[in-house]
Length: 454
Image (cartoon, rainbow, N blue to C red; front, side):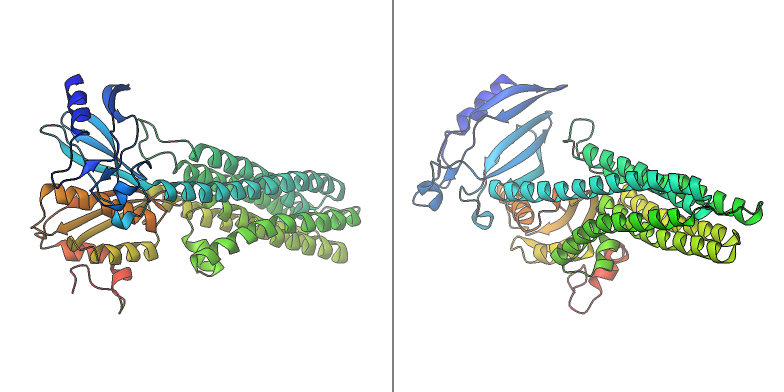
């Protein structure tokens, strides 16, 4: 192993076969990574050709890095590649391979793009946290007021709304857990990170809405409609609490709606389309919760008012049952969304189509054979592309093309978290049918080519 490290350090000082030379040496070192040794780059490296812009910017560190896994032996090598200016379209590459090994390409990202993406993700994550915290504070205060008012007035609808707010409060706690746990970095046991943890905890939040809110509302409604009639007392207290609750819920709803509308505007979609396609379950859950809360308050107000006017508690019970139906519907929709994300939903069809079109225009690519995508977290997409490359390319040219394509994909679409490019021939007679079955709704439009290029 030590001899391999020495060989790598020696080769970094050698010029390119075409006359280039390293703008700076890149020493490699050996370290232990859990159960296997890892060769890592200690400093960045920029390869320069005589008279090139890379040579003029030799003092700058490389702007692009790639991580490789070499098998066999089990060695991970991190090499610096690319143009120091960060211009991915003009980036070159030079990669090392251990004797008898095979490169498996992983992450490549320009330093500028990585910083911009990180800043954008941090800002978006902070807004999501603010939305959830605001909803948590509002629902906790409302739950206490509703419970007190429900006991004073004896209103089933008011008690159902108290249960609704308790469920929402518990849900916000689960969403905060989802936000925190999903941001953990990848490790050896979870190499793709913990992004799907957000989907899991959001699924639990949907279940809590049904169990804590809908079931309690159904119980109160059935008990009031079919049980002994109850006399309503101090209805004015109920009206006052409902009015205050409506005002507070409106504040939380406004924050959630602003975030949803901003996201829809950024993606060029309507609010409805954004909610249907979004892979951020936290904001969607808060938006649905607050919407249901406002409708539920109106139902409770109606049940309380009709009970006061007619003297019949049946109206109160009916309002409680309707609140239960509303909560059950919200729980069903949110659970279905998170179930799809946990199973492995494909990326946004717009993104799939754009990536497909880009790969078809790459000079070294003869044909895009297949394209697989999966959401591995909020705004995080796993991309696997099978490409038929030009047969005239040498192995080194193929490696450099893969690295360049990977970098350009990440520079154009920041949602791409992991990119895997697999060179394959076009020999599968059933390939076209499989691809059309998977992405037919994307590629059958008049302006979209079929997967076989026809």
